[in-house]
Length: 170
Image (tube, rainbow, N blue to C red):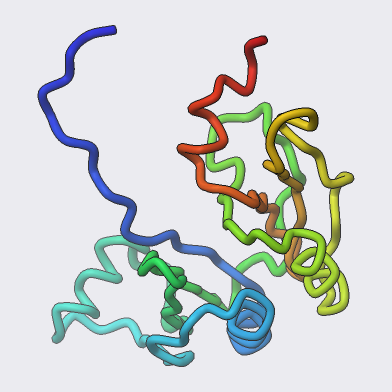
């Protein structure tokens, strides 16, 4: 492996488009416990402010307004929720084989309890809870989806702990 003298960049936030921003904020704050940093707010297309111009740069000219909310996880990772009035209101077909964002992952040691809460609040469990090292360590994972069809994963332990033992090797 090449010796990389550069430093690893930190993860700041993820942006998720949802069909109903108020229901999404309720789901993610109540079920995941994420902090509401900025409640749902309307953004109108205008070039007079830095935010307005930035949104035009990102989204182009074919919009008039949208709603945005900002949440944060317990470790300070941001979750930026968007809702566009004329956007498609259902998640794309789940296809991990295509190029693009496949999923995000959250961590909770009480995986079964969190899955039950997700399901009770309109989400789905996509697979049984699986163990990485059933004979040696209590590391578990499961894929779920929120009420809007957005797929994500749950780990019981940190990414580093899970893979430092060589999950794919004997």
